[in-house]
Length: 208
Image 1 (cartoon, rainbow, N blue to C red):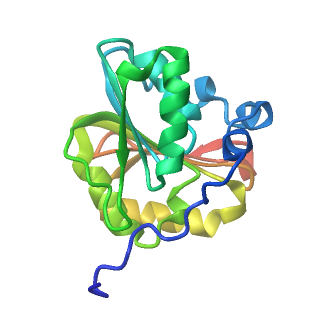
Image 2 (spheres, rainbow, N blue to C red; image 1 turned 60 degrees about the horizontal axis):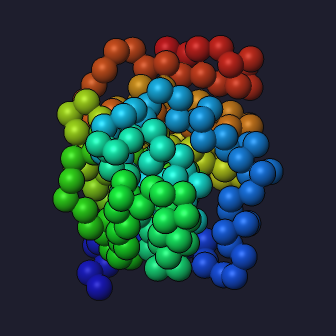
Image 3 (spheres, rainbow, N blue to C red; image 1 turned 90 degrees about the vertical axis):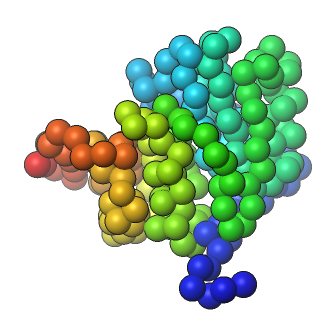
């Protein structure tokens, strides 16, 4: 492979028996509550993408929100994860709203325009983040939004680096929270109003 374009996905959380419970359980839902995280970002009729969907905790939550006129594209590198999403979607009667897509180690591999894209606890697994963010940028509709949520263990410096790569790829931060206890950012494909940045280390005060 051309070393000038290194693999963008290399350190993924592996599929294993029991991964469904490990990644989708009451404890995880308490700290990663889909309703709280998604807020009003996902609405009826939207086309949305769940990048690194895993066993589908957020895929299913978004499928309920987009309704029959919307679509959720669940993307994962591992077929085992997609099989779990398929099984759970059928059980909940949401399968018609969900499209399963297996990306490769080199590319997301989609050609759609999405109103909303979500990445929860996965960007830190991507080696070539700028290449990844360029793909995300190309998938967003003109008024689309991209939400990134990362685990606290990656640290503030690593998350700041992600933000730099995202901006280099043409994504503009509309909200930015980078503290000891949370790393979350909302991006748009075009420059918007003043960026609202909150640092929980200083009482969640806005920083402009």
